[in-house]
Length: 203
Image (cartoon, rainbow, N blue to C red; front, top):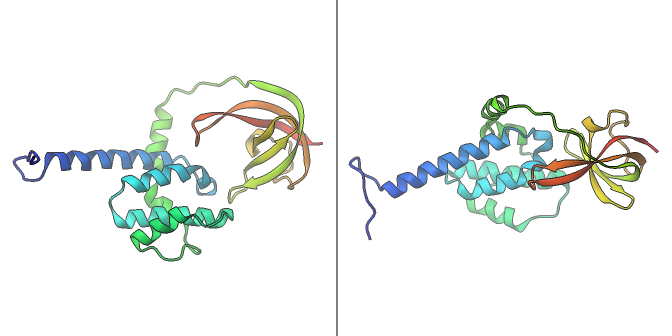
């Protein structure tokens, strides 16, 4: 069956697909606009999905190099999926790749800020799950080292954010014991509730 064509030539289905791709790309760029380069680890899933819908080879190359650089900086083992993607677009070594430079093309911070400023601001009530819990700092993440994870006794690994722990010397040393409150949080990357440790101090 032949595709319906408009009077300017070109398949309407093709034009619709291109329009949907552009719309999806703009949505991904806006989402990345809310993530700083130091926290780009939280944008991995967005970048992976973005790669799948983008047709432009140059843009695909920026995406895969960003993913590979995140892997390198995070000390993760080589991911075959990323290497296959790199081969597909002819991308070279990513060791000296600049994530910050890539985000100037991949992220739309202005669009993100516009949507955020237009959204009604509501103060969320802090929900405390447990008080005075003790745990051990497991690792610190991000180029700016403004977050990490703590292994809390009886609760497993929970998220540790610098801005929720003003009395904690930052960055805390790996292995140090801290005491604080467990509160409900929200994992934007996984789109689900999480557990954070807040108002912590050295034990």
